Length: 304
Image 1: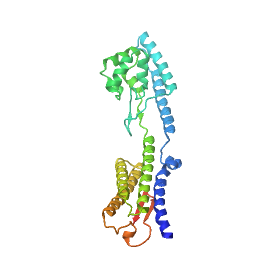
Image 2: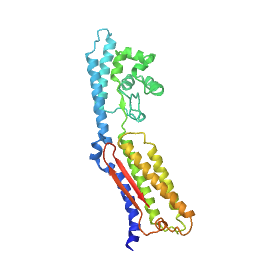
Image 3: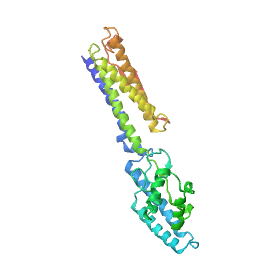
Image 4: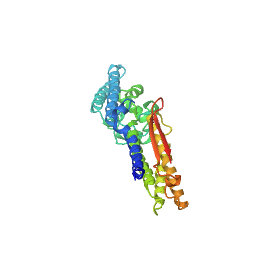
């Protein structure tokens, strides 16, 4: 009776262990912080401060630049644009980069319709048409790459700016990989929970049941999804790579046990369970051991 209880309780502990092992990186903020990962809010604050500093430097450069060669109209427009730039900087609403992971990239206007500093200045002068055209045709171009854009060059000249000064104003926006990492870890935790539940259910079910065919189907489906989830991030580095390896390993175990359950379903009737097929009455063992070192991870051992 005691062995039979462990036979049912053991696999449930397996599922709980798998789920907790994946949830720990999410709930342990200090663990993430030591590896340089910020929460989404921290990242946004960091980006706003970085861009503001960039624009403040551009303002100082414009204020200290020579205007002797400019006409009165150009000087007036230049002064007005410097004030508008200060207004834009203090407002603190800047474009975001959601399209280029791990890469700094300029945006003329982002997916929310938020303009960059140059787009803001051009739009405030009444040339929204120029902003819309560049957004549609060359939204991620650097200002220096727009040197052949006649309308832009004419606007810069009328505003008392050189192309180099406009390029100094334009910042690049860094992709925040932390939210995608957090979503990936959360998805991995849920997937591992499903795989753990599938393993537990397969181990605890009576192989003589007419419905045990679906245990194998669930194991194969959950395992295949987990393997695919891991494969999408195997080329990453650091903690994301570790989680990807974990997803692949757990998926392989779940798929193997699911396939084994299907084999028993199609096998001889005497194969009543995964345990009975071995000829003794004891629970299977699945051990999870954390690995520390240069490449952290987990070691998974399955004994049937």
